[in-house]
Image 1: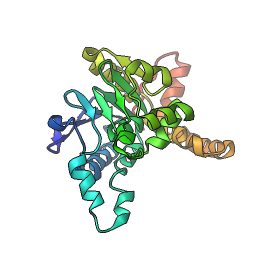
Image 2 (image 1 turned 90 degrees about the vertical axis):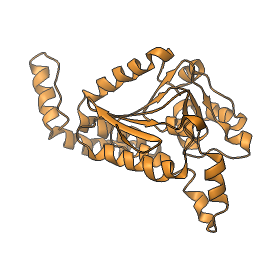
Image 3 (image 1 turned 180 degrees about the horizontal axis):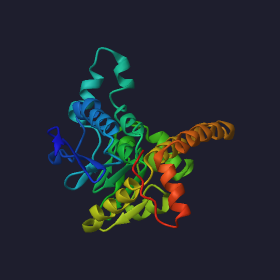
Image 4 (image 1 turned 30 degrees about the vertical axis):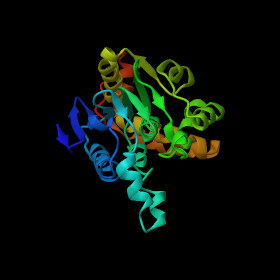
Length: 263
């Protein structure tokens, strides 16, 4: 396992796991973790052809409790350049959003504030029964950041998102599953296996097709039908030239399961 003091990185079976490990602070993000280290690990996963899927998770009883308010907020609000407010508090989610590979948030515990933003920006959320989502911003006199005003309405709808964010209402796993914030809820002891099962299915898929599918789904809300049709046509032309398409076509003709290579 490699990485940093509070962010670990490991690859096995086509799955890269990025694990937050700052248990004394419930995996709260320092400026270095958010602005430098997490983006660097995302770039590493992007560049590694052996990585087909990325899992984000936490150590201990928290997924991520958001920004380290003592260190990170003071650093930004005392900055001489007021424009620093526009980037350091929220930009860490962009590295996850821009990963061209499927991302699973394994929500092992509380995901609060920016930690909820981090979970919401993933493609899938597998949630432990003891976990919860806590949109703590409004209770601190803040508006949500980390893209949560963008991702949460896409997941749960505008009205439900507004209620959660404006009231600061914690969301338990059962409610998250009902609303669409969680894709799967697992007993705590079975979370790792549930994540491994989903990651394994994705890792066995056609990597280029999955990448284009992810990008198409991400852009759908801001695109017209015509724009989506054009994007799909571009992506399909690329997929038609891959070895995975050739394998998928052969497997269909031979009545067998395809064995995709990711090319």
